[in-house]
Length: 322
Image 1 (cartoon, rainbow, N blue to C red):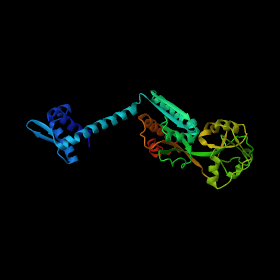
Image 2: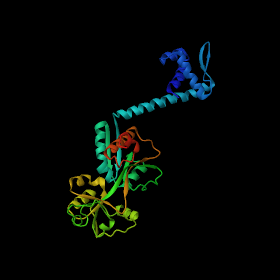
Image 3: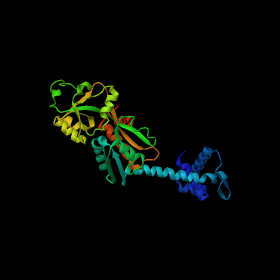
Image 4: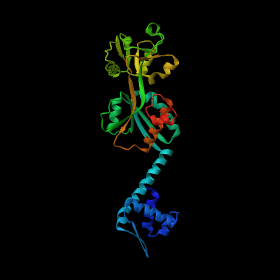
C-alpha cells in the first residue's frame, strides 16, 4: 500500500472536497478517486460518502482516519531517519570492547568513520570481555560491544544479540632467535602442540582461557616449563621479541610484528582453534541511527580489510570478494 493512498484519504477527510484535495496533492480528481478505491479495496469497507453538499466520512472512515494519519507520520519519520543516517551531521556513539578488537581491529574503522562523519562524537572503552558483556546486558551508556570469544561464550544471555563479524585464529608466536626455530621448527609454517611442551609460555594474565580452550579442543594436556603473566599483550609481544618465551595469541595482535620479521607465527597442526570477534547489543532495544550506521560502515570496512575472515557474506559479496 502506497503512502499516496493514505494521504489522499486524509486530505479529503480534512478538506471535505475531492477537488481541493486533488489540487493540494497536485493530481487530478480521477487519480484521487483511484487512490480512495485502492484503500477501500484493501480494507474492504466504504470510507467516504459523496452527496450534493460534499464528502463525508462513513463510520468506518471515521474509525480508520487516525490510523491512516499515524501511518503517514510513521512512514515519513522512517524516511527522515534513513536520511539522517546517510547524513549523520550530529550524534554520539559509545562502544566498549575487549582487548583484541578494541586495540587491533576497531581503531582503523573508528578513524575512517570519524573522517566520513566528523559531527559524530565517538568514545571507545577497552575492558575485559566479561565486563563488556555485563555492560551491554545491564544497559550502560555503551550501545555496542565487541568481544573476541569462542562462538558459544556468553550467548546464553537471552537479553543480548551476539553476531560473529570476524573469524579470529590463534597462532604460536616466537622470536626468530628462538632455539626451536633454528633447530626443529626451521622451514615450518605449523607446529604441533607436543612441540610446545616444556616451553616457557608468556601470557597477559593467568586467568586467560586460551590454553584451557586448546586443551579442551585437542584433548591434550599442556605441560609448560613455566607460565609467566605480564599484564598486557603488548608486554607479551615485547618479551617474545626478546626471546623470553613463546606466546599463543590472535593473529590480529601480531600482524605488524610478523610482517616486519620481528616475530614468527606458526599455526597449530593438531587442532584448528577459532575465536570470533562478535558484535554484542541488547536484543530488545532498537539501535540508534548512529549505531546502525556504524555497524553498516564497520561490516563494509571489515569485508575489505579482512576478506577471508569476514563472517558477513552479504558485505563480502557487495565488495566483490566472493
